[in-house]
Image (cartoon, rainbow, N blue to C red; front, side, top):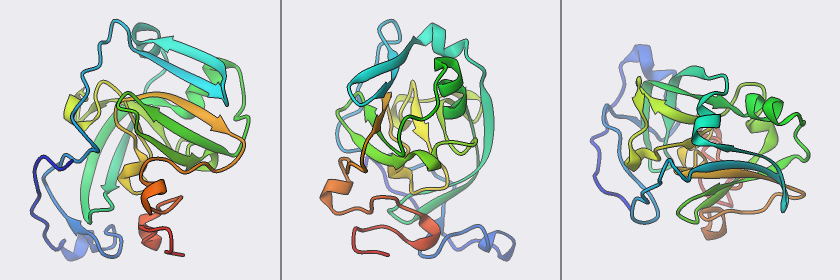
Length: 202
């Protein structure tokens, strides 16, 4: 669902090198999702790491907020061709979650699971070494519901459909299992610099 559009523009020469092919820069923050915005109650919110069906660790909102937080600043890119420069996110890296759980990544693949029954696959290598976080704040404020609040996955080096909104868990899987958009023809990985938009893109 797209609740509002955006006006793209060509970047200045100074920013052109930061724009993947086929993208336009926008100052807006378009809202796109597969359906209505779910309302997530912090009193019952939990985030669960699991290895297939087996839970590895789970945190309440209070427990999650007590974990070490990291700030990340940079650019984000949506498969619908908009890119937004110089965003600031704060949350808990996947490395910190695994450390808190006392485990290493048990497999090479994951599915991010959301409260709206959305899911998306992300290779574990794209989540580790500080490359991804579960974000709870955007530009210094709690993450708004329409942008995935109270918490969303942030994988900024991949197209933004991989940064699942309203995330409630991360499941390690034995094989690369396609998620909601991947089952509908989107690329299994989604690197914006390689224009991996659809399943037949290299």
